[in-house]
Length: 351
Image (cartoon, rainbow, N blue to C red; front, side):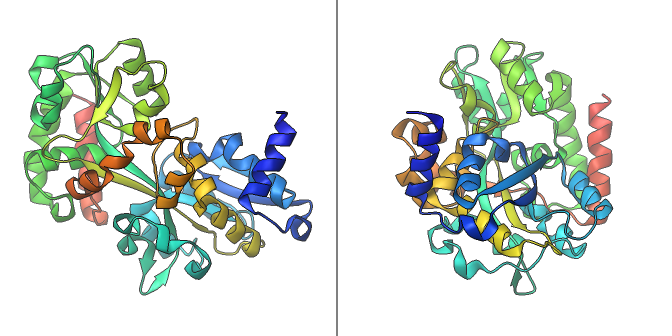
């Protein structure tokens, strides 16, 4: 089948219409790397006869700074960490979202996350994808029983064989959970205990690494464990290296979620909503879940009808009820606590 034929059939299957209405239009979106996969974007472009311009960013601060420096109308869609939706709303960078046209009844109830996406009764974003910051490891090189407890996963037994994911919120969340501190209840006094856990982690770690570096270190055998990893880290490697896997320890882990919304001031509000409708559709969700950049669970449960059995097995589809019950959301510190946490993280990195 030719690429053009495949796109035609995909477009027909999606039931997308309205290409003439936006002929020669462009949509500008600030996104995470999983949205840059052509297999996700091209069907929408073909269906609507538009060009989607994507700019990848890392870190909410970078996105907000870029929006602040842009003119109203420069951007149409924003993908953002679920816990940071309120920051974008406070900065007047997200427009109210009409969820009546979205398949909200199909979203896993645990990840609707109204506490993040809705402010003062107004919804500004919807959860599109979620997953876990937990423990990734090489099952051929570690004792898998050790991976079932956070304390043994980063213990002296594996000194020099550990990498720590370079993002303070999930890793500090894991440290809190290891000490039986709920991430939602984290206060400044808890940082003393968390500091001790982070010091143990760092002393046994060979590296603190971002996404690509952590994946590479695990895949090449430079390390055998990634603290803060998860399905997003190993799923793309599973076909060629099935020994690279992940688990939710008995204490639990941290759950991440990313949201999508319409940028305030967009000159293409209808097209922006069409894009979000596509992303939230079962077909769009299945493609987003298995993006070539990183995998994660789709928010729309009906994506399960589109994903293959092998893809669902890699995502641990059947385990989700247990995982959702066992995991906690990222810490959501206020401004003062956030500064303290970042200072502690920087001190940890310098050890």
